[in-house]
Length: 109
Image (cartoon, rainbow, N blue to C red):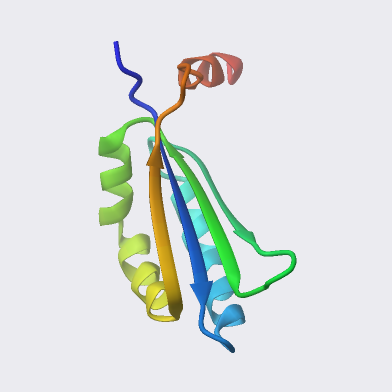
């Protein structure tokens, strides 16, 4: 049986001078995204050596949860503002080799 959990990794390089604006848009997006049903993890990282680089690591219980995230009011509000400040974007989808989603849920109880 295939595993339902899906991971999205987004690498962004923002335009010079837009770093703080992008960081300010990511803060509420990250906070609201973590509250979504089906969102297992949502973490925004900023480059240590290059503060114009961001990595967003997202885990969802399934593709429907990812699609619900994309349709959420907070995503619709902040994502366009973030993307318009970007020079480059790269999105990659992943699935786990093993089904750790059930293990994580069991450990929460």
